[in-house]
Image (cartoon, rainbow, N blue to C red; front, top):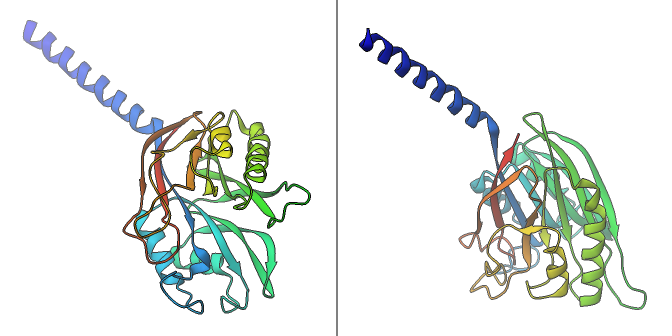
Length: 267
C-alpha cells in the first residue's frame, strides 16, 4: 500500500512539474531586435555608385531578427538607381515593412523604416523639432504597433540630428514626449542617435528608458570602432532583457555597425 501511495504521489509531482513547465514555456515569447544605419546600402570602402542591398539583406538575415529599425534609407533616388530600398529588403527577407520619408532627395526620398516578421497593425511618423537659426536636416520618429503571437509590441525607429547638441537634446525630449503615452505597453526602439553615452541627449533618454546593453559597445567607425552612437532602448514593462551585441563581423555594408538585442516578451 505504501508503495502504491508513493507511486501516486510521484506521478502527481511529475504531472504538476509538466504543467508548470508548459505554463512557463507559454509565459515568454522571444524577441530579437536589430538597429542598423545602412548608409543607403553604399559600402564605405567602395565608390559612391556602388549600392549593395544584398549584403544588407544578408546581415539582417544572419541575425534572424523579428524587428529591424533602419536608418539612411533611399526610396526611388537617382543615386540608388531609383529603387525603393526598404521594399527590396522586405521582399528579400519575407518581412513586412513601413517607410517614413524625412527629406526629399534626388527625385525620391530619404528616411527611416521598419521591417517586421509579424503584421504591422499601424505605423505613425512624428516630426522631431529643430531650433530656429541652427541648420539641420528634418528628422522623425517612426512608431509601429506590431502584433506578435496575438501580443501588441510597440517598436520605434529614429535618426537624431548630428550637428548640434541642443538640437539633439530637444529631439530626445520629443521622443520621450511622444512615447510617454505608451507607458503601459511593451516598447522598444532603436536608431542612430548621433551622440555618445555621456552627451545630454542620451543621459536624458536613460532617465526614462533602459539602454539594451553595454555603453561601450562601440558602433562607429566600422574598422576599429571608437564610439557608440547607435542604441536600442526599451521600457521595462512586460519586456525582459537577455543580451545585446554589436555585429563587428558585418563591417562591409555600411559606415555603421549594426546593434542587436534579445528580449523575452512577457505575456
